[in-house]
Image 1 (spheres, rainbow, N blue to C red):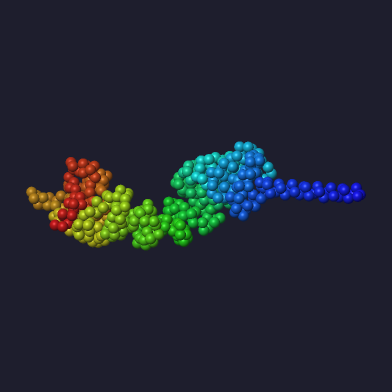
Image 2: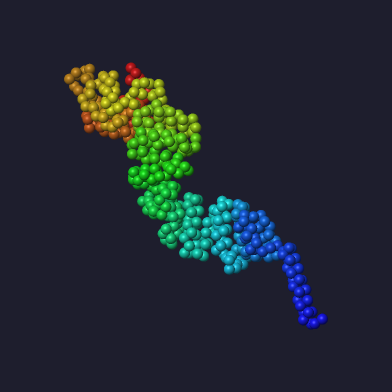
Length: 449
């Protein structure tokens, strides 16, 4: 047999042996990073994790295997395990062309944030701002986490750096505007929220905050126009309708406010804070429209859920006479002409003759009257009479102003009537002065007589 034949046979045997070894290694080996990545891309996360565990048994410092393990756990929402693997990469400090410190820290920050560990997540993003000082995202994410923690001023500093790097960064602009809104710097908040609106004119959360900012700046029409857009979003619709109602109350458009608040109540979760606030706003609108019956309905609804909500208890106490006295009810719901008629009837009951009557406002009427003394029928004494039909207690400042008015009108007596009550300091002030006080109960008796 020729030597070339032996060589050929030997070569074939060598190839066969190599093939057998390779096949054995393929069957028994744990696989490689590329296979694990393919499994992750296919959504076969558990299979990928098992394969990567075998790789890490051979080399626990393998940056790619650690990263892919973290990624697989991240994909299935197991952020604690993901965090462990990303931290291992940073601990070992072993990187390659694909896996570097920046990539590991970004995924670590995301996993920390997703697990609710906002402090550590923020710290990772702050480290990234040092490593990548020209990347606006790092400043934005750190600022956003501070914003979420209500550390608004610190958030503003970072978010401003983000928009300096990228003036078209929508999320940074919008969050910056919201942070400024929360610390009541409305004029500056408006600038950033409007810039965000220019980039995305339909994003509802940004428009909602911009509408709130317009309200505080007194730009009510602009706010209402934005809310027409915002209320189309089902998630923000209840808040948008609530804000609409609030703005319409600000502008004294009470009937329109009731219409919007009626819609809001339909969409708001029952017995939530927003639900209570919507009913409270309804009560304000009805009270302003002198529909006290409807206002009381809303106060009673609130009282049934949260008795100490705002001034509801005081309102119901102040309007207690309304439910028992038709005379008080008629007084409270009367228009200005009827209000003056009531006043004249009261003066007649008090045996006073009006010289001058002035309807100071929708709630206050004042008259200069005369009373002929028994001892001297020719001597005329001026008496100043005031009727106040708001349910707020009369303060000392109000009776002081009334006393000053008595002096300017040369009145020797004063009579102050209210459907509500007088504060203790107001009563003390009048004790040694010629001022008679009629609270709601006394006024009711006078009206019903």
